[in-house]
Image (cartoon, rainbow, N blue to C red):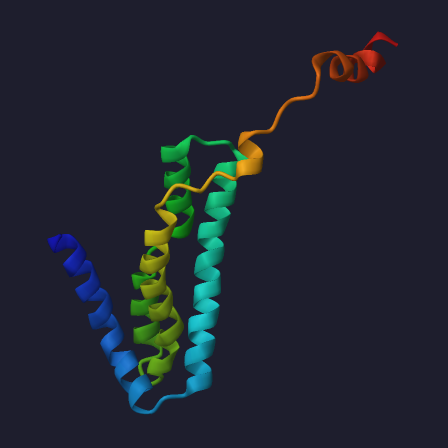
Length: 141
């Protein structure tokens, strides 16, 4: 529990400088663009991980691990570099910090196992006689 509090405290401390100025003089277009694009990129990363776990037919624990391995990354280094290089422009940090905050929220939702679809659970294979004769006819040729 203490680790989670420390991580959230670190994220909010990093965000305080950029968000303080952004909220004092808000540019709503920039805020919407930063949240929208960072949210889309973050969701895409987690979706690619979930898709790869389905494509490789991983079992549930491996699929969740693959989803996290694809979706989670360290954006704190990017925030530090951006803060150093663009110290006169704190709004540069908005997409990075919004990505970092949204990543934790999306990771909580992505940690749940995927729901199975009813149409895939009850799928039946075709009759073996017709299917086998159709697929092996070209081999007997």
